[in-house]
Image (cartoon, rainbow over all chains, first blue to last red; front, side, top):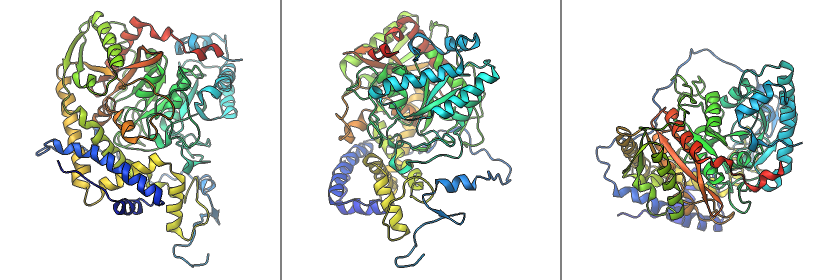
Length: 102
Length: 488
């Protein structure tokens, strides 16, 4: 049985994809834990799944559609109240690039 | 003034409201007092909302129409169900202070039935965990022993009902998060068929597995609550358009001729022998009531945990992309740019278990791993479903333990993710196959409750409840009360 291993560098790469940052201690910890869990995942390779169709959903219906009419709830103010920072009726975020002023 | 919910089921509460022996306002006040008197021990609620609850109760009393069985009855809602204008956190730091602008469909349906929400119950962060210990806010305790975990992820809802704070509560179940805490607390918990209940307004963890369901002290109460929350909803594209039947219809106590299957894999390695013994005694009791019982095999059971953790984490990693600090909740300070804002907010806002699952999911979906992990798991899911289909050709229900052990000590397993994941082995396959699954109390081991799990065919909650009810009425275990009952 092929054993999947995951290196510290790979963990750091996946963290980047997931928009997470880890310090050295966390990287070590996650590398060990993820390797242990991947070992459980590896047991699946024992099962012959040739000619087995994958199941991605168990719903018995495919999407309900409604008429293509805008349903505007008019809750802009309530939505903005949840934003950590808002100005001029918009959500405020930092600059996209370093060094840009506001 | 507190109110002793151990002495009343929903029907009896309803009768008192109809006969004006108690008002909705008095009941709501007493429930808030119940929580005040016991939440230091139980730690079941992240927040309560007395003002909104009392205003709601007052309106109900003014209207004076108690036609509906839930009108005027207080409820606890898991904190991953959106409640309009009331903080809903998913027990995560990243949603601290977030007030949804709409009610989840189940909340709206409960409100339309006149139920009164008194607060939001504790849970594992984003429903990820089996002990409610990954909550950012607090550690809930088991209603029977406050040194033990309540199970999870809906541990707050389970502890609140089992501890007599509220007559019923809602939870969500992605891999056992209703049934396992129900088992650990000796109450009734139902995960309905996938599609039976709208997921709209439930914070999505794994969209192909998540279902909302009720916690109650009796099967009859559970069926009544499910009737109120089930049904089609245009807001959830996977909500079933099937008619909602009367879930109480088969609650007769009669199971003569019912064909029960007992999978041998559910009594295998890792199952505490004392738990197995207790569950076998419960099955023997069903047989004595006239059901036929045969041993069957669900051969792919042992692969369920691996398949589940791949599928669930993949879906979760995608669903949790939305938490980025821009539109709501927590936002990290001292950031250089937008990218930094995302990374810092997520790194500071999520706890370790959530990060672990996001990492597993991101890995499983990544280019090099997709076929070997995500697609492979989806194929195993097909095989698990075929196992169930084969058994259901000949049998009405499948029964076994809900969890391999009774509740363990607080802090005992939280640092061992693999042990925690493997403990979900008996509940996970039910979610992968989208089946209804119920846990009812099957007695006690060392003073802690054991759960009997009853699994049904898709959309056959009626027969599942029928089985649970017959056992419950024969065993009368709901007469037993935890020590905390003396507080009321």
